[in-house]
Image (cartoon, rainbow, N blue to C red; front, top):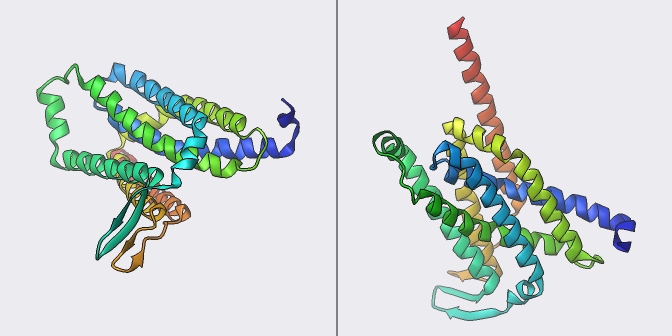
Length: 262
């Protein structure tokens, strides 16, 4: 308890909690899109299960933080005429997670553009196994986001006394905050198709960023060019800018509809 008498502890805790919430928004968006395939009475349950699983995975990864840090050593080396890399455990997880996000996001966009989802929901009832499929997808994406979140937490609290305690508290508080706001965010995303498409586009960006970050950690060189890390600030700015433009579009559409009614 002595660590909570230090100002650095509270600064680190508040900052880390805020970052965990920001990083968790991507998780909420994916969970809301995945759970939208379920009957309405099961969607809240899937969302809560998904976020609770995210908390469990992050705490388990935090407890194994020393092992995560040790995953920087190359597992195997790739030496070809056009590419060279030293694949590490960290980079392997990030690349695999990024590829999964790219596949899932593009397949969801394909289904929505082709209109198969609407046809399936109107012509045939949803399968009873859908809940298991959705939870499986949520578990896989939780692992990806949890790993990225834990690496952020480790980097922020490095050298601070009681770092593990601070990280676990920050994760628990952030998940509780996300549980409180998950349903409104999920309802908003599901009620606005353009926001849902925008969210899927964000997941493509995040998937690409994870792949490049994994390649950067592997010191990958392609055709003599080193793969650099994409600054997350650029990504967050692009997401914020796109959301701002979409909010303006929604406001214009809303005012246009109200004008027609009058």
